[in-house]
Length: 126
Image 1 (cartoon, one colour):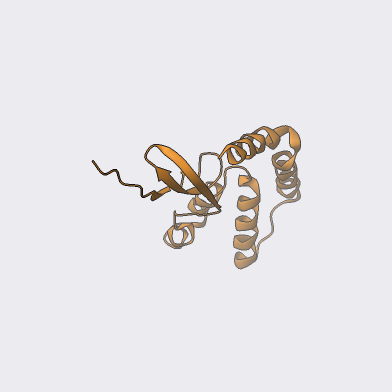
Image 2 (cartoon, rainbow, N blue to C red; image 1 turned 90 degrees about the vertical axis):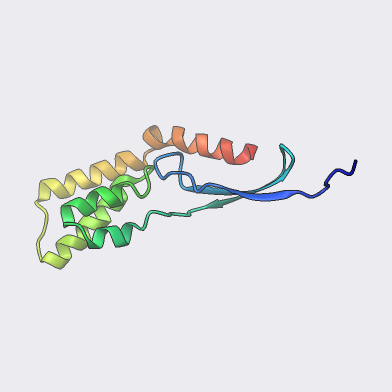
């Protein structure tokens, strides 16, 4: 009986954006054994820009927030600043301060380091 000696290359992902980052894995399999794994980071498959074209600007905020769950406030702030510039308005000083506070909290090691460690450890083991 002849056994096939070929390996199989398959795509795993892209994973959903609400999981640990946006990741696609290119796997080479020999039966059930993984021979090689090529991680491809940054693959976003949701068409956020196109979805925002058909929404109000308030609904667009929800789409850009979900684009990257590790830094949602940065995406939200960039989107809101662009909308404000297009409308010719400026957020009140209190809102501007709150934006900076939320972005700082989001970027601090205390709030994001645990998630980043989980991503790094999963990438290292692959």
